[in-house]
Image 1 (cartoon, rainbow, N blue to C red):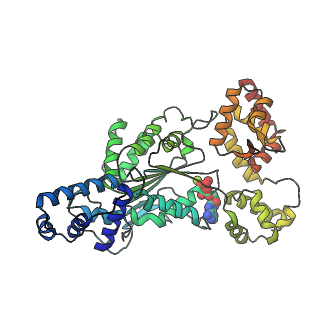
Image 2: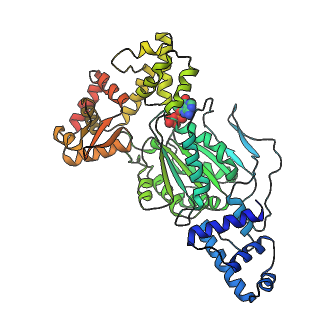
Length: 478
Ligand SMILES: Nc1ncnc2c1ncn2[C@@H]1O[C@H](COP(=O)(O)OP(=O)(O)O)[C@@H](O)[C@H]1O
Ligand SMILES: [Mg+2]
């Protein structure tokens, strides 16, 4: 960034924050500071006293510190502003996709901003993707990518309270493409971060393991400690010192099976404090939490106007045609219906495509000829795993809704249910948090529908011994 660009960015930030344009003296102070001039010289040029120039300067650094969440001084003003925008960091470490190892990649030396104090972010750029899957195909999602990178890169500076955006939750049903999107996002945002770290919580590591693992990325010699608070404050220091993007995938694995949504497994409740801490304490990093279910404390903080945002991922839309194309399906005129039937969910479509290839010679029209939605075995297996995770009361209500041909209102659900009003309300809220239930307004009444694939799964399985056993169990527990 040249001086004029830095100046423009500073002016915009201050205007956004205070609603006021800079006056002549303020502009001159910023510009001459960028040119490396002393307060004394600026005072001479502007015919103001040096004390007054220092006073106005100090006020400017204070405003900028509030906006950027960092201690801005005359000495570090230029470097910090340059670092907040896209600069040409070149990765020096990256994951070798074939081996999943972190390697030092051949790269040119990064364009290094002048360092003036130890708080400056280094120009190194480390990407540690650990067990992230390799992306082979990526279609569409342009809008979602641009929303996320805007939130992470540009909007973060413009939030009304002057904070950076610290936590983003990326939600969506299983197979919709959350993990894939987050990995693709890394390509777009990597130049803005010193560290990009991806970790899956699929195997439910406890918080101590997760924190120790993260700390060892910053300082390999970090020793383990039983004291979570010590580990947290060590991590906080790194998140303050470096601009890091930490992606935690499969956050839903921290929640207890068989209970209503959003309740942490026992011994995992401290993640709640961890996520909350990363929203509420000051640092310059960003946490991306990926989950099939809403994360309760993030939802709460979002309503309280903390620097948190949520993106819920929906259908892949017309881009899903590329999946049909890639799987060499025929009957193009039937693709749209196929895509809609499987909710534009790339994993579900891929499973359907396998069945269409194997049993219908790739002919979509023939596969779609039947009135009923066919659920490939692999898809049933995936739904079954999630089904096992639901609470007995949720299963009851889901089955009740699955049997309706029309959307059903909360009043009807309560009337037809054997659950108490309170229980019914809790269950509906829980199913909504799991993104399994869609609510919409019809004639001034909120009505609910089940995702058609789930609806079909419940119908198919209502006579299945396994499901009835589970439902019986549900009956017994109510
Ligand atoms: N935008 C996309 N373009 C092409 N394939 C995709 C896309 N998003 C997801 N997929 C494919 O769909 C499957 C499920 O995606 P994934 O990201 O694992 O979903 P989730 O994390 O939401 O469960 C993967 O095989 C992935 O390759
Ligand atoms: Mg995933």
